[in-house]
Amino acid sequence: MRFRCEVVVRLKPGLADPQGRAIEGALPALGWVDVSGVRVGRVVEFDVQAPDEAAARARAEDLGRGLLANPVIESFRVEAVSPA
Amino acid sequence: MSPRVGVITFPGSLDDRDALRAVATMGGEGVSLWHSDRDLRGVDAVILPGGFSYGDHLRCGALAARSPIVEEVRAFATRGGPVVGICNGFQVLCESGLLPGALVRNAGLRFVCRIVQIRVETSASVLTDGLVPGEVLRVPVKHGEGQFVAEPDELARVEDEGLVLARYCAPDGTIDPDWNVNGAANAIAGVRNGAGNVVGLMPHPEHAVDPDVGPTGGQPMFASLLAAALARA
Image (cartoon, rainbow over all chains, first blue to last red):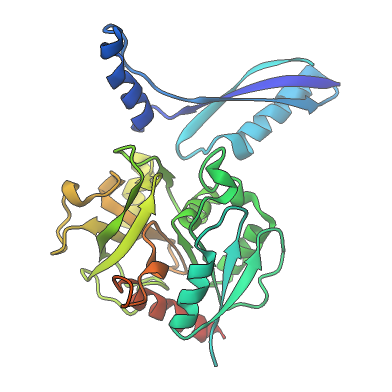
């Protein structure tokens, strides 16, 4: 069976995020004076063949751990797994 | 007998040819290696060159680090073989776990392309064996993602175990935030592994071996590398 998976990758909290800071810096000029703490991550979506949802989720975890996130600087979470 | 130094070409590598040329200029024999081969062609040392392998997609060096050739490099490094990662090559070595830490976007968000000074921090590596700690070398950098980072525990370990290869510095060798070109933690420009046979650095020694075109801070580094390679030949 085919499953659609979403993996969200985030920078670890302690690490400086120049992109997030740049975005946050631009906000006041656009009228967003009440937004702070901006951090930028990424979402990776993919289809995977698996016998069931639990197996698909396990494959998504493997891919997240093995490639999609660098454990030195990032954490990841499998956000969604659904039949494709 | 010339030492044979392999230079890996990944899809998107740019500075492989300059690395081969630097090897030849400094008296070695450059050997081209291909990313999808499982063959290091009997070389005595391996260079992972600069560039934009896989377009820096996902993360710089992330995809290249999973290449077949890198598995061979891992085995070669385990046997004590000299391995040098320059710029994108440094990113590949960190992604593959052969070196600590990671390289992220420059703190100032700008791509930096200029000649900098680096201060040698250790002579206990295949790249700095002929150098004296404290020595200042002039070399070019050209990168957008060269900020060395590590979690606090790992950064402390890198410092405590003497794994820092070089730091960005002022012309007189002092460490000063104004001369930290990308915001790297502790101004770290390069690191080594514990055994000193695997090194990575963001600056480009291969672009600094020819006095006719620029600084020559790369000469002593290539001399050390070729000596290390010769010792294995």
